[in-house]
Length: 116
Length: 116
Image 1 (cartoon, rainbow over the protein chains, first blue to last red):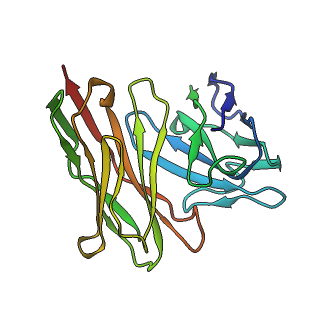
Image 2: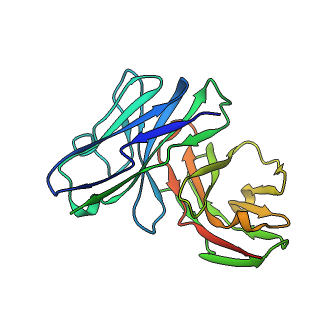
């Protein structure tokens, strides 16, 4: 299995600021994803973080608002830019493929973001 | 557009009962993936299964089983002899296969409460 950590685990931010969330996997993985879960809601995929190329964003999400980096096979960051209260959510990182079974997907513990 | 419906918002069962969680999907793609995830009260997300649209065989894993019926666009999840630890929100999801991870849609979730 893979262990995924996220930093920070939670944060409270002011409107208009940006926050970068880090996701670290304890083994090399093929694919990494970023999701958002608004309070009491289902999940939404934000983007696929591609190693060595630009992230692939889902409809409704853009790079200017959610820039993503993936400098290597174990690490990715998601930045939430120019935040507004509507960005208050739990942000989750996941990974699959690589050193563990391709058929499994693992999730980080999430980053709980509150925007005032 | 892709869509996933989980008509059961909440289900309550008594321990040891069998329970089936329904998932109905809509897609124009001929190849796609279907998923089930579990989110216990602690909040972490747990991947349960991914199924390719070409593989209609039912899957059994311990007390869990999945029934994929392309004819009715359903991918139902059954827990046999439910336990209190099965209490969680369960999400069904759908993704394109040709561009894996893209057009990824989650259902609204079904909250399962297993009472002792």
